[in-house]
Length: 320
Length: 258
Image 1 (cartoon, rainbow over the protein chains, first blue to last red):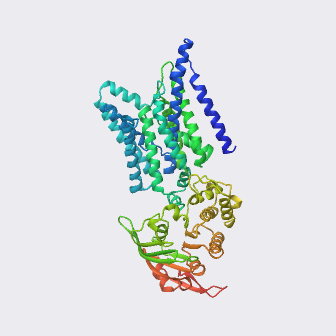
Image 2: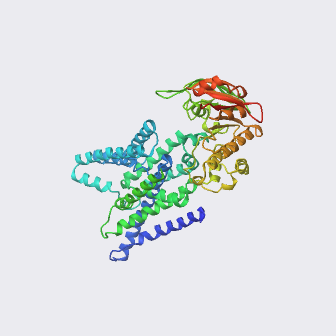
């Protein structure tokens, strides 16, 4: 099957998923008016929100995998999401609230946390050991642990209500009411997607290695800065709104690479479509598995992602 | 003067990689850089494509200091064939070679008929047509090396620099690559800078030789004067014996293992 045909099939699949999932329901039927309200005020905004978050998470994962040339490198495995979580947790704990250009304090501090984490990973891997697979991932693990323990520390200091809120939020959840969250998230994911689409040729050349990319005329340093900046922004926004939903950024782009190939001109749309629909499916599952109660969607993605990570690790090891 | 290096030095935080090397390369020249492992050959190449910054000295490319070039502009003048690499990629050969047209395009520019021409030509010259739709990861070492050269040709630059292009090839493919480089130099008037360990190839086929030792220039001169017992002894810490080539009267050097 040609790549374009695969993309069309993926688009149809995505449309189907987005249309069907709001209507899936195992609970006892209530009056039609209430049903309608649930669909239009809760389910549809939630599906759209999940779709947008999934697009963003998958896209950021794809960029990290390409930049570090390692399928295990994603904003989550490298500790960037932990950085963002810490930033958000600090803002919840201190209770500071303000907005700059429509950005909430939580979003801004999550963004700052993500940027700090990413510059840690980047400088350590670049200046001390180079981009070797193991050291990069170990750096990420160390950074994750460090930020996680700081989050625990903040949780310990907070009162019971705040503490519970932080725990629930750390599990990753997409429970929204109305379109408010979607409106906050959409600009970030759109901006990130636009920047990454403009840099698709550079991403392709980066896959061949920094030296080749430089010799072909890519300003590797500035491309990296731009990509780090927009992915931090995107991860920060998503983490601030729905908590760290793990492994989407690892599974989706990797599966897309296997199906579509490495050419980012096709990989980017595929990752957007599949990332969005994947998170919608996971969220629908989270809503239905123990209905009428709900699981946090992060539990589902992590349950799927853990074994996937191990599988990837084995494959990666046997290839190198 | 296409490339003009005066007293250039490169160092990392704790080590001098190359020290006050001077060297001129004219349009249409064929320069071979020789020297033992770790003598700074690859480092020198990497300064020419601005992968490594020079610490002191002056490096002019086409009359302009290299620091004033944007990477994209430099990539329209000089293309680079690395020692190895590319065989981890799942791009097809065709895609990989097309990607090398990057420096001739901007975000919104369309793929032109001229681009197709250059790519076809690059694939033809390097004899990559038979496997142009295969994935890079499925190629043999020789095929991969030819694709790397094809990509550099698709970049369509007056200067081509190669880092040990025949290092991993069998004798047949070594000859094929050497012939290809000579053809590019003589028929297509490309300026060639090549790092090599094959001193006979350097002496017979190039126009100038630059011999590096411990990051410094040991000798720089016309290729036909390069082969010399004392110089080779000093360069490689190895005795050589010499014989006349049966087909012409230039010398060939063989490491003396006795």
